[in-house]
Amino acid sequence: MKFNNLIIYYLSGTGNALKASEWLIEKASECGMKTSIHSIDRFKDMVLRETNDKTLFAFCYPTHGFNPAPLMLKFMFKFPRGKADVVFVNTRGGLKFKKMYFPGLSGLAQILPMAILKIKGYKIAGSLPFDLPSNWISLHPGLTNNAVNDIVNRRRGQMKNFAGRLFKNGKAYNYKFFLYMPLDIAVIPIAAGYYFFFRFVLAKSFYATSDCNDCRICVKNCPTESIKIVGSRPYWKYTCESCMRCISTCPKKSIQTAHSFIIPMLYFLSVLPVAAAIYNAFNINIGHGVLNYAITKMLNWIFTLTAVFAAYLIFSFLLKLKPINKFFEYTSLTRYWRRYLFPGTKIKNL
Image (cartoon, rainbow, N blue to C red; front, top):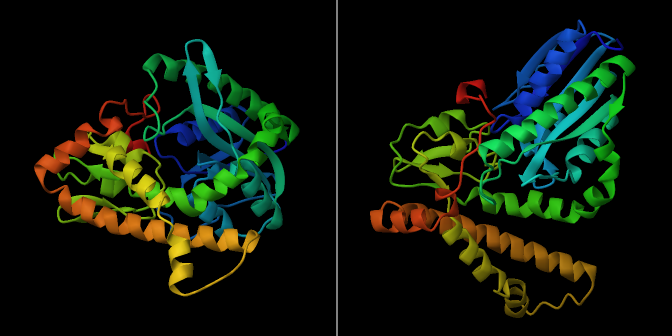
């Protein structure tokens, strides 16, 4: 074996990255390697585990909007310099329709972490874009149990095969890393838009219906500490990463995505000529071209995020009124959609 020590750092919202990490650990143990696995939930200080010259670091994390999960990205930026080998496993939203399987896309979720750790001196031992069942139920209905089980059974063997090659040869890449690279590069503008703008909007789409019993499980288990109690109700901060843990583990299923709030508001804000109004008010003429486009976009984004924040405060206050709360509950698509946790996963495991 090329390695005798495997250290895994993982971030998991609903269990996918956790299970990928556990499958890696199982294969490493079969190969006689020393192993350790560490969640980075709510990490404050960097703690580097004991290493040697045959240590392999593995980073397992979700893909959020064609990006590495922001908390994992922050963790990587703080990770100390070194010369060990590193491997990356980014879980993506796999789907199944009838007998057809559909992969997700990585975007920057592989490229950016590889660049960060390479600059820090590490050797890239491999990567695996890993298509486990999609958990993004704010944007689509949850998968059926049969679809979830079929996807999981396919991926278990894939992970064991990848890990076997990695531990034996010292390097391993999945063909999807190369096959989908042109598409991953093509969606980089979307990934940038999500990272710098839309993830903050999505964070302000969650709310608790009148079924909430103030158990505060969501507050205690949020991996980014992004939920606080305001007026005895959960309130989502901009640091929310839409990992779906809260919405999928709420025992009352009271947490919803407010589609009837966020979609009309975004449409309304998108048609307001904010930048043009500012230019006219201050008699500014910055001309045309790339600079004008960039400044216009920035002004519109700043205004939209500010407006979303203000509207969410009002929205949260109005939810105290039961008729309004019920209106948004029954017009939220997530009320009718399935939740998702990796099969067999409990909130205590995360």
